[in-house]
Length: 355
Image (tube, rainbow, N blue to C red):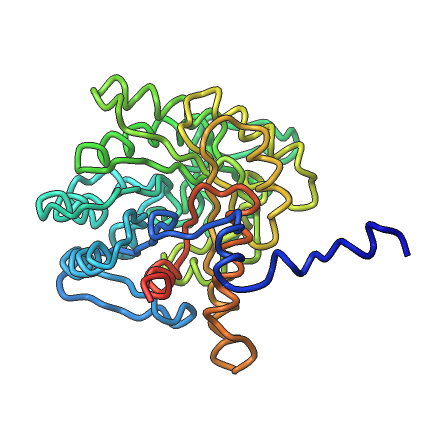
């Protein structure tokens, strides 16, 4: 036997919990987790989301109670999504600009109550539009593939309109995103997070915030967001499924390698993103690692609704130890480079860590 074979014992560094903890290179703390919340207008609403056990649609007053409880347990940040009644939706998503919508109302309540948490808001229009896409649409002439100047209207084409004959109007959408960002900042958002994958959206938002005097409001860009099957439960939660087609024309193709993801992230950083995000998380650890190595800003990851629902279903079936598997996944995110993790498990994780 060689000398190295007889003297090297890798198990020595795994002997005992104190030594393992001392040598651990990924750590978990309450500050590493962001809790998403779905808010809708009304009073005393706490509506279960059936595909996401333990998650709810909340009216602003109930969201305030939830945030107060989270803050008391040590969670330091939350991410708000608006849920919109059908009668408040239109083709452009104009309810997103109502200062009294559920997101803005919740922000003001949390600010006035002195909730000591970072307030992050999702910037997008899929929840606010009748068609469920991420901004106002524009027609495309199918024979020439050139855009018409007239905007999509249901009376013109109706529900038979296919994804090949309409698309999100990128430039009209980013102009609206700037307006939405300023509205959220005025209501108390510390960080705004554009999620629609619109080209040059970060630049438009940064310019709008700076012009309105909110130069200290940060931008967390969903810079790397894939067209994924793991978003299914979210569409129930936010009541925002596309009414035709899908979002593959603007969200990323998961068949592409990490070079496209790195390019997307670097473009957003160049336009003023203070942080970038990779979404989804569990099937994209290679992407997360590559993006983290390429950018010089903090990188987040989103464990999305389908990933959460899979863990819950497996745990309820008795197939896994939920706590062990969830914490293992969180360490994997951290090991791959996530500065923080957006997860519907935030409250449970913090409870486990406090134990």
